[in-house]
Length: 346
Picture (tube, helix red, strand yellow):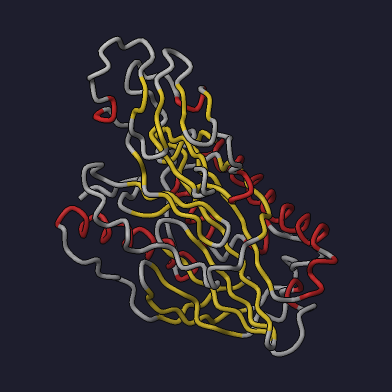
């Protein structure tokens, strides 16, 4: 079967909750679909198809009073469930306007972040309660927002860049991270988990300066899950750091990258601004190389995945294939990744 670019029947990161204010609408393109987000009168997020069913004008161009969205073209009104509540020009007051509906996507707020479920079949949302992202925090805890950028690449290239260990030495050369002159042979153990795989908990590499300021028995575990979520959980004594990078396809040539962060380390609040700036610099180094990648891909070169450094990329493609098969055949997803120890030099 041909591998799909976009995976459906999965949850995608939409935005950090701070970007979605009551009484305001936020329009986004996700997997090529136009979506409008808002918060209802109870501050609960919702997501609707961003088209008025009358003449197709984006609902995000209209007005929202916190309860109803009014289309700017003919004034049709819709509540946060997508049901039409009013058609001003209609003289027939016996017509049940609520029969007219805008598609409503399943939408959830998890630890201060907004997620949307994108179905394959909009008439079947039965899978929406499955595979809700586990962000490792109890419900009352919230992530801090670090950065958002648009990668000029499709989701596959973006994910492979996210989980590729070999680029770190050359793209992220910084005094606070590592140098290409200080290479080490790495041996990492991997195992399958849920919709992806994880690098088993280990002590960070000695040539990774970013970890050196953390004292008290530091260990880290890195987890990748479909459709494009990389979670790093760092244990520092009794404290923890959770750093998550989420990739959401905008369309077939752009992918949005969002980075969020949480820690119980009390001193971080005093150094949050410079820490966030370092995180943004790290992300923009990736953005810079992806712009160069975009130039190279214009000539449609033949590409390859080689050896153990590219094993995670091969796993990603096989995970996608198995997910597509499970959705087409309506069978349980079977994770194809086998436990394995990988080696590379960085």
